[in-house]
Length: 124
Image (cartoon, rainbow, N blue to C red; front, side, top):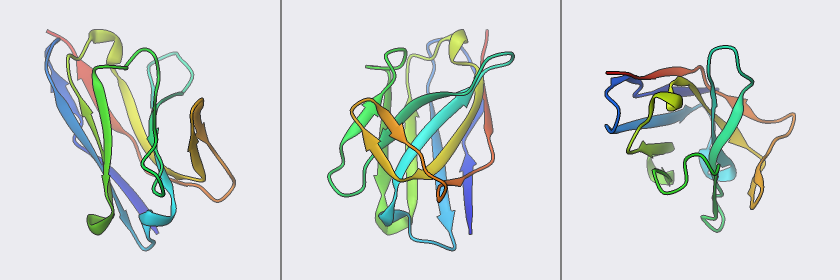
């Protein structure tokens, strides 16, 4: 059972990146997908999430209008399209298979799966 996050890298301010979260060993279709990030010296924060059943989404205020979450259940993969990136978006980004995505953010449980992080650096 594994979640593999990928797609991070170095990008200039204003640029774009797409992160992927590929699941293996289990069916991602049964879970909400969440993206979190942790910047140096800061606590981990929820960035976005998406349900499987109804496709409802949540975005943190700091990324609304710039980030877009999606999923392809046939590929067992989730995505986070990040546009208009800012230096403050620099962080390690983590994906997770979660219980549910609510209007107020991801709802976690003891049965969640977490991937390893992928580093996003926004700098000129």
